[in-house]
Length: 212
Ligand SMILES: [Zn+2]
Image (cartoon, rainbow, N blue to C red; front, side, top):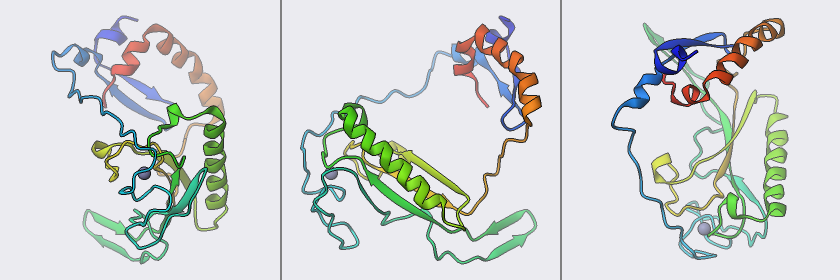
């Protein structure tokens, strides 16, 4: 089994029915990737300059309500919009289609200085309730086939708010079916299970160091 920790090999992904190239030996390189300094959080409970804080004016002129728990609104710079043209373009290798959807922002708390990890458990439960509500509300839409809830934090991740709040969860929904649906049937999954268990039991470190 050391072979799988020290040498290049490929592993089968039963969820998508594809093989993934794994190169665990590359983790022995001297350079282990760029390391960023820890960001010192802003300690203001309410930042008058923050477009997500309660009672502040957003870029589109709307004024946030004086919310006390979670706050959900349509993303002012949504990646997907409901009125996107349904055009299709095809020319040789280039194939493109209009894609529509809905993008929302979920503020987790009116506290500007908190992250999800530092919130009381009862308030975290309310955030989870908001995720569930958004998932159900967007998912019931007949044109929406997939709802994804995620959180971006920090400028490096493309979160435009430079202050490290943990409130910018976004619920995005689009008509696109998941392109990589699980293609492996339950019987095959069952048959593969012993193999997967053996690999994970033998070298979890190799799982962390794999590269595609
Ligand atoms: Zn804020």
